[in-house]
Image (cartoon, rainbow, N blue to C red; front, side, top):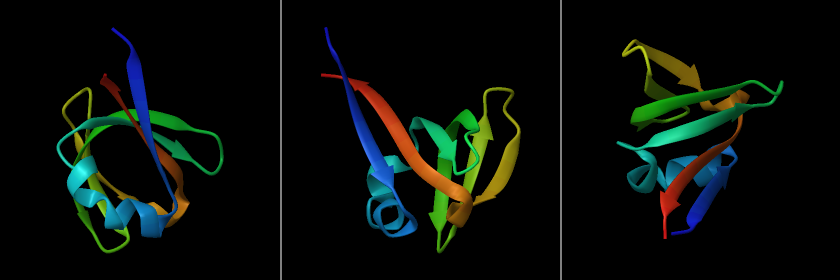
Amino acid sequence: MSMRSERFSGVKSITENSSKITGKKANIVYHDGRVIFAEIIEITGTMATQRNMRLRKSTIDLTTVSEIIIDSNA
């Protein structure tokens, strides 16, 4: 089995593809190089609600996000 990655970079691309992103675990890459692995719960405007692997919810500003990467089995 191979892995397939879907990359969404920029606020416009992330908000347009919110139905593909929400409810899935993703790598969130910030402009400063930080990477967080979390489940995207909801995307509204330029804000996104996420749940990290410790099951804590937080809200992130999509203008600070470089890209969101979703891995799936192809």
